[in-house]
Image (tube, rainbow over all chains, first blue to last red):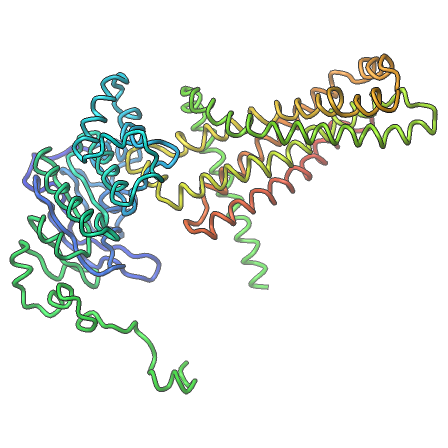
Length: 272
Length: 257
């Protein structure tokens, strides 16, 4: 666990191969997540975006290829070293993954109480600052089930940044949100990234908001990166796969139909 | 044949995983002991909140023993041994066994469902990603609470069944057995070995039920059916394990007596 000299790239993924059983998720993908930027990883549902975050967080190990975070090869770490690295990362789960038996304040205080060793009065100050940053200082005494979906994700934001991490990963932060909540969340990701000097990876299939707040975009398909560039470059791309994804066309390089036997034979009961 | 082999392989695999998980939990116990507040919270949830069902059940079972015992003993003119009968049956068998069955249904199922739901809602993965080991933070305090609570609940069950509202109420207060005879027979014939064996049984049952509950919850599939299966499996396996272990322990403890 000997990090090399600091480089512009915080997360470097090279030749990533990963599969769930027979299903290939990554088939030689390369990514670079640069420091200080909001990097979006986009693609249709089930393409492996969440899996990528869990690979970076060391929950899964790649079958081949390397994932380096701050110069450290994640797959080579033992559990203790991995936990040390994770203290410098925040992951916001798709539905928040808040601890339901703790109130909002205690949820945000949780990583601080587990790791910081700070006195309770100082933890209280930090928690209030983090909650204020996401606009929920007034909701500190509520329990997660008393909060809306958008509030729960903002609480999860606050918890993800509680330990002042170098990297924050957002897993589908906008899914199922109303336009107002969606706008608030999107602005928060950008604002917190810039104000706290973070680096962010945002995994999403919400095209508009994600392109608006990102510095760099990767588009995934078939286990590989099929397009990458700034949001403007992605918007201007004439690639059929990119156009299909951005414009939400039902059929294209990604087919509408799942792979199946001949339709006529299937109806006549002749398919194998 | 292939299917049978598959069933046997699955069972052995599952048993192996459960044993490894048990070792993992034991290794996490010292970390949990360093945070007594977490354990106290779980003792409240697992033990204190189970007291009502234990007190009520202990009382009714004691009353039934009082009635049944009196009806049999009075035929031999031996109704003054009612206290001894109720005490021996309760301390040796019904105290630990019935408490364990109730504990599996009340606390074991709750533990499995709680941990299973934490799995299904990514709370355990969330802890992992916050560099917090869920076995140390979530599982070990609950396991310790179950281990500590079971013998205490069994003791409360026995006190209720023998003395406070059970056999004593029916035998002495209602049916007129002499109170002095009721208690003196217990004092004379229930020895420390009876009580010690009851405690050992309660500790073993508490350990096994807590182990089954936390294992089932922690390894539940992250779906509603997965949580439901974990809860059901906990009650079924913990009850069967209690009854089977009771036979084995009884065979060793009371051999030839």
